Length: 235
Ligand code: GLP
Image (tube, rainbow, N blue to C red; front, side):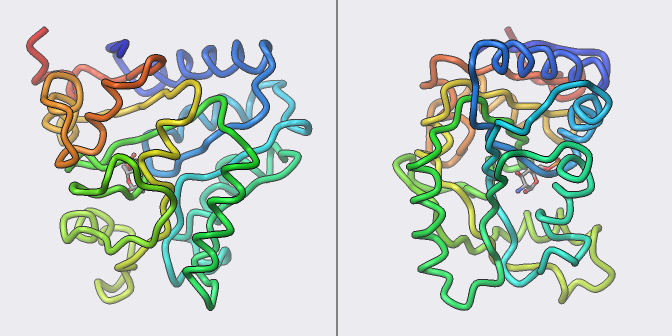
């Protein structure tokens, strides 16, 4: 696991952008994408670049259950705003959180992933160490699945909704095994509230209680973190 400590999200975004550019130049065809605040500057760099994705496919990590793509809190909406309207891909996949048959939707998404092995995966991390929406306890061999969100995640997300009842309680998320299958993984984390999760991810035991700790077992992972997120690391 390579850890790069940066001064700002802008600096982190530039590093992640360069990594992506190199991967595309060497033939990457499928990008795994993440939502959340951490990759926002990275997506801005892409929007302002001359990169072309018309021959590239994207697969997103996760989506809430119950929100449609017109809802400004859905991940489909986020991706359109942050990236897809400026940089259309050959094809972009997200789980459909409005599917009437969620089990069938989960299965469909696993087929999508099997057909599109991820070359370059972007990740954020939750305060409890979750990746995608793989909450503590999610099995390391898990595929795409329906998730009951942890109370701490629902609480962290509540700030984005007018009404606490509107915060989704479930999501569809790639599993840990899907994430680990990506050839290269770049995780970005900024701010003091991520410091415990980063310490456990980098220096703690590899345990399902800290989903991101599994990344210690992957051979091509780069963590891009600011000084606040790095503040509890001892090495
Ligand atoms: C959500 C998303 C994760 C994301 C995390 C952290 O739970 N499902 O993919 O990494 O939030 O978000 P942020 O980058 O806003 O801190």
